[in-house]
Length: 412
Image 1 (cartoon, one colour):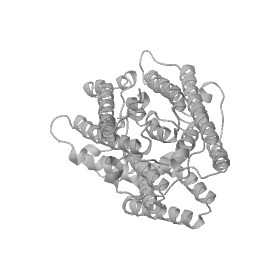
Image 2: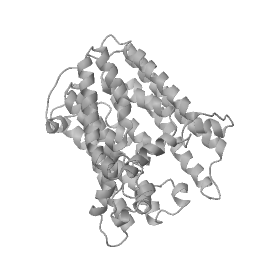
Image 3: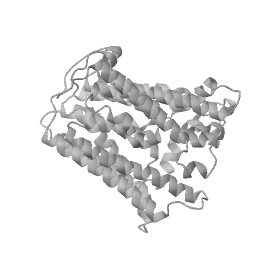
Image 4: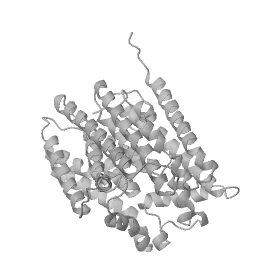
């Protein structure tokens, strides 16, 4: 018997699942709350979070501006830094300040998760339930402030696929100014415009994104340039690090020099392959259809892969799915992510001085398993999209409130 679920019921279900995800994640991290995030306990119990760690390490406990501390400035783009600073004023100063700061940020992150899941529910109602029940997402929810950038990225994708390009560009700029990952999506944006022969629209989109991003960054750059540059400098100077294929290979005895060149070459190859993939479609695919394929592949060959990066991939994966036959591949990928999540913390526990943990070789294998399952899931989506191209994107204009709580309708 086929059961039809109304949008109202679906909304309640998605909110309930999101709250459940928040509770489960809170329980997972609660051990470290009770032990005041001691080392190597945070690694042994896989409950480390940047939120309490940076509260004291970046002088946020004294309400200092995030970028005014030189080498002690926060290593994030400006909107994240502003959020980190602003939430210090929302946290009660009485009692355990570190714990209060963590609680207020965790609460806001759960709200962002709920809103993000509702957005996905409007864009991919068939698969939206997978976002809050994804185990790797639950395991990583409170590690960092990523959800602030994820929600604006999803909104940017939505408005782009609805051909609201100016709105999308503004939201894309805000997301890039929050966590920088969405800068990768400018490549498929450009390729989609190119395929549709909309050169002027491509220039406009890029210009709006750059101007809004610059306007957001300018006050921090002009007043605290050293603090502003810290994020970009650290990423440019970074060598192969935790979670990357390059680091895993080095642990297995395959040492590669000039990792920056290999990373750039990998990005160039991915860009060419994405262009060939997009232009193989008879009709133009939506941005939601290709975003996961690009970002997941790039992260497989980047210089670092932190556990919380999966938070970006889960919503994009759901947007990229088209058929129920994709669901098993999603769970295989999640299995790889969970294996890696357990492996990285047990390996760090050993590095941090624990009496037991995961040795180099086993950690490297877990990293390669994660990469293999990710690329497998990507290949499934690529084959499915080429075999069953989606319907052409259509024009639609609606208010955000109607979008979230109105009657469900088709999405590109």
